[in-house]
Length: 351
Image: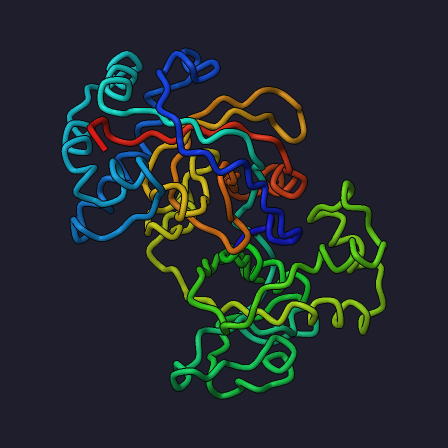
């Protein structure tokens, strides 16, 4: 679940079948850093090698037929591990082993791993608990909604892992993972561990529908400004319009230079990992995106990797780009809402 879900944007395009194209049809493909794009692909390959070869990875039509199972990637991954260092070798491998399919145009948003202050014990500055998952409820039963959980409905059942500012805690749930900077300078990494099962409702959409923020001005920064200016009760009431609630787990093994694991189980790479709709794009597939930087407006022509999913990432040519962590990443992800042309790469072969 990511920042883009604040607006529930779909970005769906027409539902024509994915169309095979030549690499020469990928805009500015010759300028891409193929060697840099290969490293995240190798991380995907290591994860796929651990999986059942027949496990579904998703995808539609030819994308599912050619790249919808780990077995479909086995030979390509084996060769990828043996590619010599250097740009020319990486480019030759990608062009020889992979077939691009055009998905058309859609919407690209951005998300980050938030970095925020917090503590391991409650404090007036950090009163809101970040909870681990409670016991699984009986079949057919739902856990309490956000308002009830924050009122104490899961006290004694969902362990308190740490504490944060209430608005920071809410945005941490939207992003699904984060870095908590502790008072002694220590760092606690938290990752997604489950949800309460209630439907997600975007608070940004609520404010747009009320006429309080224009749709074209909506961003993470605009939401934070509204919440900071609102009376505490009004801010709490807005957060409670979203009944969905996210639980966390500690992530002890990650290095500081690694992103959090995405849905695929691979640590996300800044500006190279993409959340997709797995009903359209197989998890693990490289995806060439044609879009622009949300702040500078400069072109982005880049091979990224379908290593994650998101609650509002639905439809063709719909993606959410992982920008990393830190102030610059937050600034870009918070306002990113760009048109994108997408090409999915899967192993060559006959569907």
